[in-house]
Structure formats: structure tokens, C-alpha cells
Image (cartoon, rainbow, N blue to C red; front, side, top):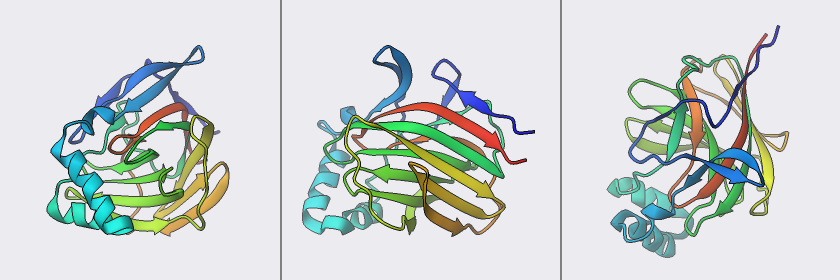
Length: 211
């Protein structure tokens, strides 16, 4: 029997990480979760550094920022009532609203007590779905989706992460774009993920354990 758990905006969410911001917002009469990271872009040295690095290094700007340890703001929220997700499916709808530096929305999973985690995210500035790992505070690229996808702002789309043992699969609008075998079986807390000045909305976050 498949048991689904739907996390709604009025349920408890836990703030973890260097910077966190998540609130309930109205989307045409429907309550959804929203992240607005623009407050960290205005007048913040790290935000200015990120912009300058992108102008100088282009697609390699993130490697530079990681090396100087200045790119430390990834807003995310962790669901308190899902202690150990493994072997199942996490799905959600997301809407990219705005973002000067980034336009990101993602699913956070495999969150460990020491803060390590995995995330599959879509970035509207890069038009791609990517699996990232965060280990001992350092972010590293793992795998990019099979092809780029152009999404319009202010439109709802679907994202899904499916895990079984060590295998991770990432879907965008029901299309499989990422398949990867992690170093060990996936298990841990889960949640939502964003980046820098992204303005994003999240809805219909559903957790479905495997049979």
C-alpha cells in the first residue's frame, strides 16, 4: 500500500543552513510556500562578489566563489515530520518568479545531522536540471540533466526525485533527465532548496514511500 504525505504551508518547517527564508504567500487565492532571496543581494558583499565573478568568469564563476568560500547563501527549509526518507518519491510543483543573479528551485534530500545533503534543482538562468552535493560546507557539481530546458517565468512546473538504494533519478515535467548512483544508500531528511536572490514558489510537495 502506498502512503502519501503531503506537506502544506501551514505545517511546521525547520530552518537550517547559513541563511533561511521561507514564508506562506498567496498565489491567486491559493496558499503556497515562497522564497524571496533578493534581500541578500542588495548591499551584501557576497552578493556583489557573485555578480562580479559571473561577469569575469562566466559559467565558471561558481568555482571561483566556492574557492574563496564567499558563496554561502542557499535558502532551504527542512520538513520536521519526515525523519528518514529513503526508497521512494518526492514530487512538487514550482514556479520561478524572478531573480537577477539566479532563478532556482529545488528538492533537498539526504540531509544528514552534520549538514551534508543532496539537492536536485532547476536554474532558469542556466536552463538546466542539476544534481549537487554539499559535503562539509562545500558545494560540488555531480551531474547535469540530459539536455537543457527553457522554462518561462511565472509558470508552474513539476519536479520529482525518485530514490531506490543508491540510485537517484531526477525528473522535470515528468521527463527523466538525471540518473545517478550515489556513494551509499539515500536516507535522511528532506525539504525545499533555493539559491541567492531567487524568487520562487512551491506547492503540492508530496512524499511517497516505495511499496
